[in-house]
Image (cartoon, rainbow, N blue to C red; front, side, top):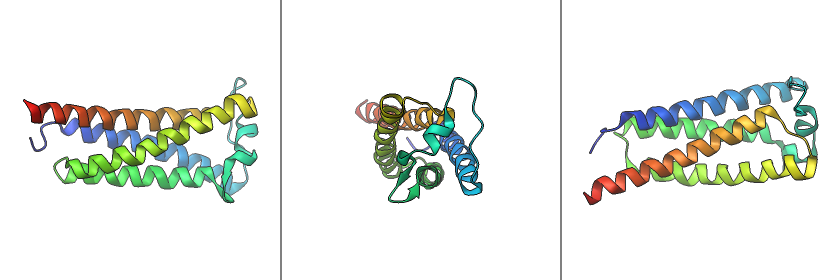
Length: 147
């Protein structure tokens, strides 16, 4: 079963990389004291400058940068270790936490702030896809073991 589906790790590496780039951009903008550019339909300024954009005085963008970096490293380790189930289970657990965080921050945007951040939505989608992908891969591997 080793490395039968290297595309699995490629999908995880790609999603983590996209999330990292998004979080890097938001972190850079925050570090420079800038408001990320947004289209007319979004209110990135409201979201990125709200009290909800910090956890224990740490910008959520910085936490997102760390989160996606760890996912990226974990996904790469998953690939390097012939797609070991240990790394996959850890990635599923971590990305599950990221998914729940995305649900919370989406709720805050939609029902507390009544404003949406395009980059935050992209991060929520990326994090959700990563989590769902890990669950799908785990399910696929269990099915292979039962056959």
